[in-house]
Length: 237
Image 1 (cartoon, rainbow, N blue to C red):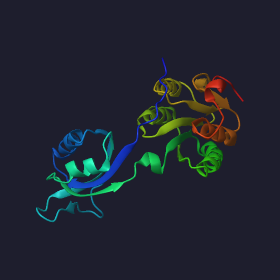
Image 2 (image 1 turned 90 degrees about the vertical axis):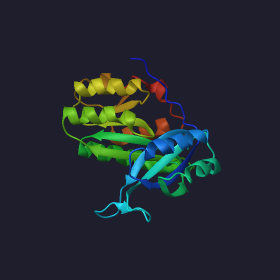
Image 3 (image 1 turned 90 degrees about the horizontal axis):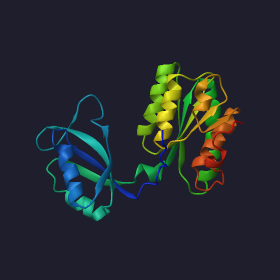
């Protein structure tokens, strides 16, 4: 399966909105973004309300929802100008795109003890690069079972800002290996620990030491490191 190299995303404008929780509200917002010459990069629901009841607007008592919107190819003034007059938009404030706040993400999936050790190396290395001005975050989830892990691997392709997956476990193969092939085809590389199972033949790099695996994962996605994963692809350490 051919792999696509992930391209850096263009700069974006981010805005936090409180809108009426009604059909058509999101479509109206997307249409307004188009009028400003922008393109919706992400639109996510932050929350409906604090507590158990939905937020009520001051004028008609309709429930509201808070949204986080990131837009490409539009400046802040133009975006505010087209969103502010919308009937469904009750409040808004400019924020920072998550790419600038949390940056690239390294995802670690597998068994608890191995995940913890990979995270140790990844967080320590990320701190070194983030002190130089980068933004690299590390997300972990300990999972047990072939199907849960395979589902998690496939879902990495849909995670915003995910740039690397580390598989940390004692035995992986079967459906997990097939999921790894699918993820790599989207352009997200995978580092795996040296473990039992076929997964070692379906990843970009195999590393025996979990701390070193986490370190190398961060180095591979960093802009300030000299480590080139393409030159190491297929090797085992």
